[in-house]
Image (cartoon, rainbow, N blue to C red; front, side, top):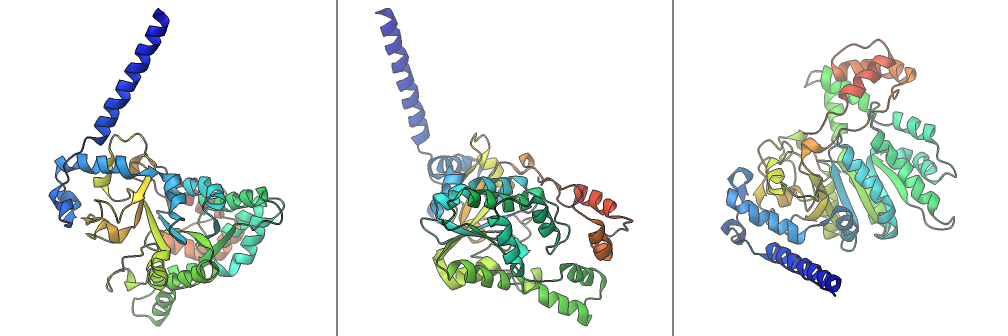
Length: 386
């Protein structure tokens, strides 16, 4: 009898503890006046006492990040994920999500910034082959625009798509991975921008070509995903992703933005997610102490919507957050994130012979061999976050 009583007592104590935790969770913190009045304010102006409300809102509304991304495709045809290129966790997240994107969200195409549209037939062969060609994938990576993009995680996405496709029945529709970028001579562009006078015809011509990239990416995404009636994820760099923000004419060459162009054409069929807290230290303070770092929520429909970005956020300084991003996924403090894994031996002798001048102009130093360039890129190509 005593043992039964002890079990009952423990059970009652657990119920009481759970009830107390629920009360604490639902214990309402007063809504700040600036939230009630829908006012904009700078991030530095958020009163410390309002952080508790913002934390509680996140606790009550955020979802696990992977589920948040999957659920977005119930509402949107195309979701744009705008990464910072040097952060390893962003690629790892997308790689881990690929099977669920296909099986649960109905995604049939991933469009990315990192290869040419004209190379899509070659890319399709890599992701649909009977056996994965790792050397072929590496050669493909070396041939793309930057010629020094030695990030293992970016190119691992090719194999992740192949693994998903390889698991499907032979007659089932495969997941496509497509390059969105134009067929641009990026080494030539960088040499022109860094070595020619601003008013030279050659530099102006190169700049004009460079400014066409976002429109080309938008056109290619529209043709391959939206107009085919498919669901798609677009994985691109930050500043190509904005749907509700445009660069002022006197900044970033006044260039167009892929996400903005797509949203203008297709409205709310297109949604944009920004992974943070890149450049937003106030978000780190608000999220402090949260054990679950990977979570997401609709930013435009949150109390964060009208908080202005810091001046230091170079792409969009002092702009309300709802214009910078529509959805938000939190990956933890920037200092806790990791830089990409460098592929050793990425630069070949052939690449060195072809692009030696480009490497020297782009990095502002001389090189004597492919090995020197490769060692330099391993250390400097993708800086550590934080």
